[in-house]
Image (cartoon, rainbow, N blue to C red; front, top):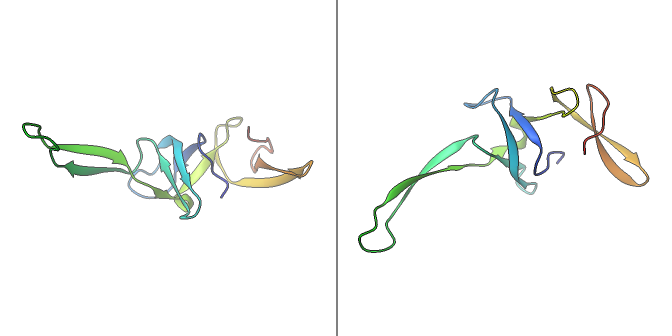
Length: 102
């Protein structure tokens, strides 16, 4: 999977199409990523203690990695990612401007 924690991505399909956000978690075994403020779900939480109120909590749910595109920090466009090998290491490269990702 070519998308990692801390990357900026843009959603290309679904209810949040066109929105940008930073990847909070990467789940490579499931092929999903969790992006902040994208794909928000609501969960009703029961009160734990007596006298405490129940509440509705919003949290970002994982989204399939095929539904997001990486945003290149250099050209600021949603782009595909290629892999170059330099010195035995894999380096991610923007397919648009050919610059490497940090």
